[in-house]
Length: 406
Image (cartoon, rainbow, N blue to C red; front, side):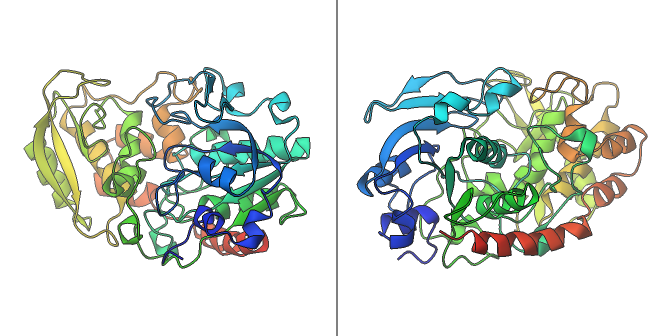
């Protein structure tokens, strides 16, 4: 067995309790390119080897094949190898985020195997929750093949308050902090319990938990390569900065899409990278070096324009506070050129009446503080402060995931 065995690894190794949930059953699979075991064999193939009758494949945001850029709808396809229909769980409307009732007809179970990156904005965990809700209503069991959190699972790593009621969206369907320290299985078990769904093989949800995971370890310590989970999540380093880097989507700064290092690279044509680097360094936030750079995105914001900015190099992953660091970066960029800096007001994840930055941070407070000229570090420390109540939720979620054990 690998040192760190995912739920899919356990299926591949023939663990009886896991195999029993799929063998001889009519299965739908929710997966993407990172749904692979330690030998990089895809969940689709391993389910067939385990004796599952694979009927339909479902793809989350970016698609089952992982080809689509962010917020791009994906159409219906057919798998060339199995002939199975590929159904999209990400389309042009919010209603298309959930499977249609008729798609579940004839299924005994839905298997979910999605590699998350430990941040509330990353939408795969919400796809899993929406599938669980629909499956529970249809009387179809859900089997979650769990995976470690690639940016660590210690409670000390939690950042951000939980989403407020009026700011929920597909980047935060439930009250969860930005960096939550959970796995998808732990999160789904917690949400199932809150919604009154029974756990375990006779309930709505079973979880094949991870074995041998050191919760303090990053994905670099796993005994396998990191497989990119979406087009702009190529590296473990990308995942580590993402709880902060994704905040840039709520502004008119480039978050580095259209470069080879998205989210680590941030800037705009009017940004003085050396000045931004110096001011961000002066906050004395730990665990990184902000190196001044120029860059030219090939697509999305400021495509083909020369931008000034910074490259955020993480030097101490355990000390690094991604949300606080990038909140400070946003506040300092706004101060550098308040006339040209702006917060995004266009449609974002199906919402057009709340600024994207508010949806990402979970309230309007950080944006209003930045607009009012509050000191960058004050904004960061306030908005990135962990919600004390979440620590209790974390303990509960881990206990519930064990209760739901396959």
